[in-house]
Length: 226
Image (cartoon, rainbow, N blue to C red; front, side, top):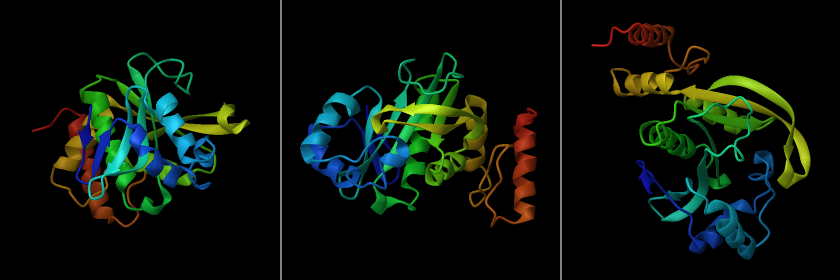
């Protein structure tokens, strides 16, 4: 399976990606905050591709302009992989990271939005979960930007690859909320950051535009879609 966005290709990992993976995964600013240690060599990265990243629904985030793998995104559906005990059947969890040189460019939100589409439309999931460890503000912001809303916090969660315990915050987006957000993004408000009820919209958006988006959201939720 291969997914595409405007700037990215999301495809299965290949052993030939080992050098690119090591290039970005060796950075101590990337893995530890997400619960895994920096990679130690190209061979270490190759082994992780074979033993971990080759699992179903794991995708290399590949930049179209260079064809280089610059990050990873995956969908977890098996009960052994899922982090939160509150998840139900027909719900999945996603995880992601991207190399530090590509932070702040909107690439991971672009990948997450495409994976959400795939999870809801193709995998027929009713909700998608995500999470972030205490202090991982970048991941929190990505999740908020993509429509996830806070669900709950779990304390003393084991992070076995880092040999420690952490506080993890869980977020969730339902199929209904995703459909609403997708509709609004495609409608008459291309410059408006649309959020679900428990989120705060872009602070730079004017009060008038926020009210406009809220009215549209209410209209659709009340079944008055035209």
